[in-house]
Image 1 (spheres, rainbow, N blue to C red):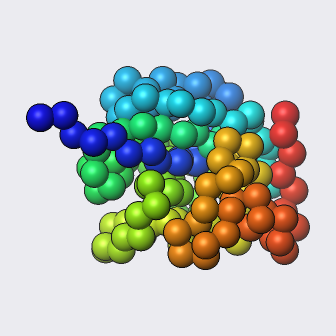
Image 2 (image 1 turned 45 degrees about the horizontal axis):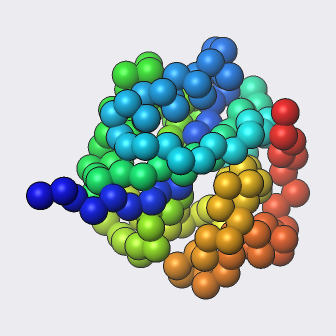
Length: 163
């Protein structure tokens, strides 16, 4: 029996090593191991957020068709981060790669490991700018607003520039 495929939107971030190469490698691994990538935003340079005394980030949003459940997707993405050499030392710290699930279809989900949609995405310019490029009409299942509208009304002044 074929499992139903769901659309998920992910945000990738990196601020260590060859950042552009890190994004390329992550996208390749995600495409090989997790599902079919149907959209990818441009790459955005972003000032560090939360813990600001670190190098700036490159961020990219991708749209993915996957048959994995939300928790299986999270597990696979954490495995890819580990495979690429990510070490988690501190919250909001430097990272070789970070892969967050922003939306999983229109699912609202909460567990110890995962909250969907991502609970802070609507407050973060570095998430919304690239996401808006590939999913501007996607409706946030909790806020009932399009991504483009959330971005338009955003008060976050963090510097996020498409490169």
